[in-house]
Structure formats: C-alpha cells, structure tokens
Length: 56
Image 1 (cartoon, rainbow, N blue to C red):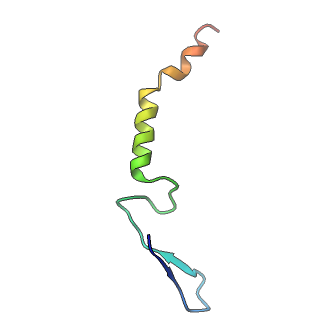
Image 2: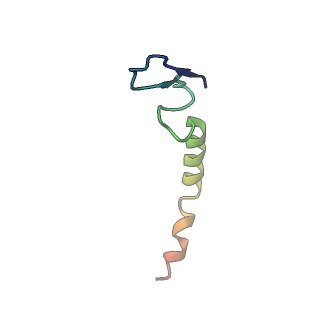
Image 3: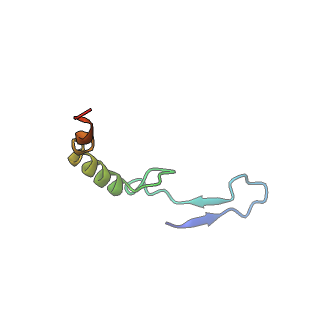
C-alpha cells in the first residue's frame, strides 16, 4: 500500500493512502480473505462451544 503526503500546510489530512477495495475495506483491521477464513472456522466450530453447558 502506498502512502502519499500532502505538502499543503493548511490541509487537515496530511497522509493519504491508496484504496485497495478488493483486498480490504477502508479502516478495516482484517483483510477480506482473513475475515472469510475466520467466518468459515467459526461456522465449522459453532456447535462445539456450547457442549459444556448441557449438564447444567
């Protein structure tokens, strides 16, 4: 990802980065591929998290 710096001293936003919409959403902390993989893991293991509460 490339960063661009504004040389205008009156500019409120000093650093700009290029958008990569097919890789990640703006301000995202995860890439789209990682989010898809984590979702697949969560769906695959979804029933296993509740097995300990059956005997209550």
